Image (cartoon, rainbow, N blue to C red; front, side, top):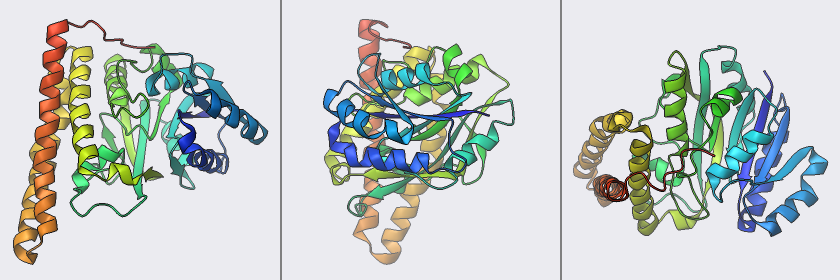
Length: 318
């Protein structure tokens, strides 16, 4: 199986992290067939990348689509020659064996995609009030995900792979979704996964915790203001996903997450607060409730906005 790795980057502020990400890929054993760095409409970053990466055997290309992560990923897919496209974020570092863990699952022809563990590498330590159930707020793994190899609806974007023909046949990542610069939208990998499993009903997407990356989390993301903003944008993104899929049934995973994972998280933290007289546990229980409320409100606002404008402005794919 021939694997291509795609890393998308958009700002010179993460230049050192991008270099670490690329280095972690080229050091994989076995190495990928190719590594492609896609620069998202940033001339200064592109110039720096062209000066450093080609001697390492890494190709540098410019985002040929709309500005944003989805357009950049689609560009990477277009330029890739591998049977499987593996995506790594520019602020993540792949652990040894990361690529091999992805590759082995594709021996099964029914596997459409694979996701792995995304370990939070906090610039400062994680805030005491931050609940582990909300690791997705900072783009990382969270409590409630499988702890063994298991089928999932979608992977986390910082560490995921798909068969290239699958991505191409369903039209690529929707450019109505995904992060644009510092705007914390998301769900582009969710929406693509939904289309992929609908197009290939006998196929599956797997989560393998043994494929892991460390994802840098800056101090700015460990604040209440970022937590609230990210939850709001996640809700709005989920509303767009339901609009593109034409049904709210695609959110069945979120309903289980709320009923089981979040409910257990609140109970666990309140029990800890009572047992150990811990205000930090009270804050975590409160953050779970507030995060759910804001995400739900964002979803409602997104649904209202979508219904007022119809489906205008929704760009399905690249």
